[in-house]
Image 1 (cartoon, rainbow, N blue to C red):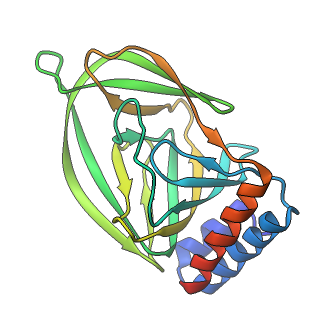
Image 2 (cartoon, rainbow, N blue to C red):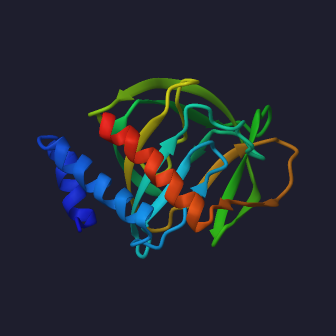
Length: 217
């Protein structure tokens, strides 16, 4: 079992991508066979998350965007920022990140900032007093074999092209005092959203499907 530090080192070096691929395939095989008791989560932003290790401040996940993702059902928007630094390696397909410049604009806002407070499978979307505008600053596309990093607090969107699935292994390191944020309606209110956690059989089926993509590279 590779640790967070092992994976971080291999992604940073970029010299042995097949080692990362083999490790992910072993994890997916364990999930499909029921040897690793995790449950897949359908994220509101359109991808599936397999939480491989979420026990401490450092988290390891496998993220998969299906070829035909369901419509994104966010109650705010797809523009968001993490409370953790993200380091990700693309194992299949391509992921497009739009980096968003957010500017305080209390007099003429386009968006309100919502704080996302996650507890188990429930996200509390807490409307804050911060009013802003937002515009795309940079667009980055990363394909299989590429790695990328997103800093904590940086607003962005992450998407794939229709009909083109993608898989990444994602490392997250929590930053002290940080919080997850999302941009939503100016006149919206605080509310709660429940994430869809899959059962054992469906998780195993997803793991097998994701493994086929990873094996193709």
